[in-house]
Length: 450
Image (tube, rainbow, N blue to C red; front, side, top):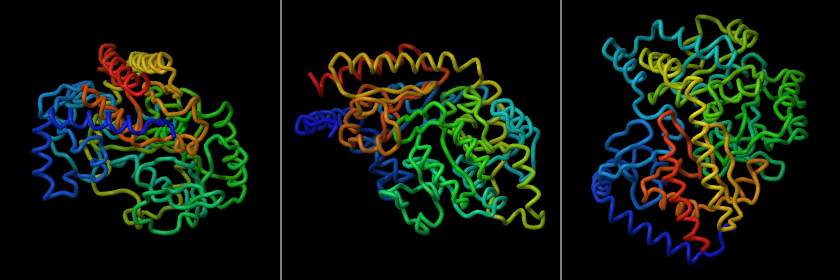
């Protein structure tokens, strides 16, 4: 167990709950009014998992801060779990989105923003052919179907403890050598071993054994794991994966939705990766629903040549609002004027400062945890060294300890990414914002270990 002093932790938790209740009465009123109309009083059930007895209600947000209905100013290091990585209400995105709303929002017809957005994505990721969705989840689903279409193979390979949105095939894990549904998989449609192959991250031997069965249509992978803690790839892992996919005729899909933190073209651009397809979402629309997937020229040709125009609207890919005019305007403005190459150095520097602040507290109190940085994102985990795969990261989790650390931060006006110990920087995040977390984190560690 990462933290052995459970009675002490329980007492610290009770103190933080009392502090939260005292300082958030208006949020409590709004939550109580919502409970009769929504399960647990929230629009999505996972929002009930935030630390504390009820969620904080937001009144307004700008840049790297938000103000709640009780008047508390917060440094937002969650940023909508990447959805607001460009900062809240970025001026260029808001202007473009507002202008398009005034002219009409959705037509099932293209606007000039669509081709401009696709060109910006090609410049970043090097893939020439792009399609648009409302989320990265939708983009992943589309590419899985296209991969099955062009290869004639039934299965998808994912990494143990991966996350690719609400993609059915990705809610799988390993039980010894068996593929089984991951804990919490709600209403799984079929046994996961019928659709999915699972291998550990950084395990070349398992990858080779899986792909040479020649029943895998696509590998769907984050270039670094980000939703079970940050797990970085071994040297040579991506080169081996690319070569193996080429040899076995498997489509290689890289999901950069979270790893866009590594740079303007994610790890694909930064590390010169060579996927057949790339998925992005969340941040690219400036805060409104938007996702996209890009394909290499050969893959795009295979996809298009395999489809009859008569059937293209009922094939299980796309949606009525996909590629809508407002999303296209948001993507064009956000990529062109907000999340630019020039914005990243300062974002990455803020993440470095956050990492150094966390490490300083761990060193001071001799805490056996570690912290890992990936571009503008950083996270600590309850391990003495960086995890090598998802199972290792998952085994080190301590939900009660995590909840205490999150509530402690929240009570001091700092919002971390929910359900793990991650911070993300936006173009508006300042050194003073990071210092607020450094001071609060040291206080939390001291409460546990001094």
